[in-house]
Amino acid sequence: MLADIATQIALNQGILYGYDKDIREKARTALVDASEAYVVLKEPTRFDLGDAQIVSLDLDEVATRGGEIQDRQSAIMYMLARHVLGSRFFLMPADVELMPKAYQAYHAERIEAIREDPKRLCYDEAHRVTGNTSVAGQLLADMTTMARESRKWNLSIGLYTQSIDDIPKTIIELATTILILGAGTEQSIEDMT
Image (cartoon, rainbow, N blue to C red):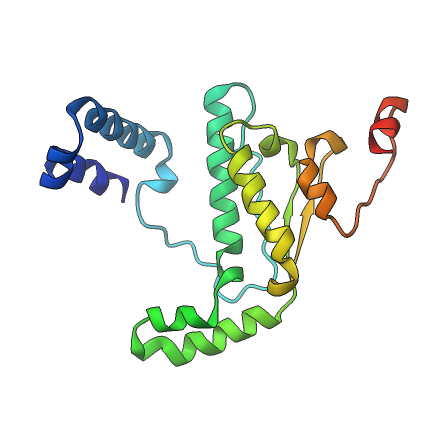
């Protein structure tokens, strides 16, 4: 938990002797601030998707707009949602060896089923994160990797927005399908062309 890391920064001998006081204090303060600002990250979650085949998370109220603080919150919420929805998509048979022996047979079967199922990960209002300096680099790297390796994972990715300029060029180049519903202005038609 974030509080445990903050405590270790204050008490762990390796950290105390390995980093100067200013760096330790800034890191500890950032963790304390984050645990207060993002209560959803403060404690372990009971949220569980179980075996759900279709899941939709509405981030409208937590992915706010307005300024640097709101952009950071939006970035964190989009990345948290991406982790919650998609982390099991990328489990590999070799991951079973890292699990306790008593559960390996169950997880081996589960991972095989997940790998066979077609999966789709969609981002609506993609401009909220693709233009967000707090997360754009991470999102682009993540999306690029997913787009390049999507066949291996039986995964398709959907990005939805009102302007093609909101979609990073790399993702457009890797896209296998682009749907345009309404061309908009003459300028947007020219940009899409």
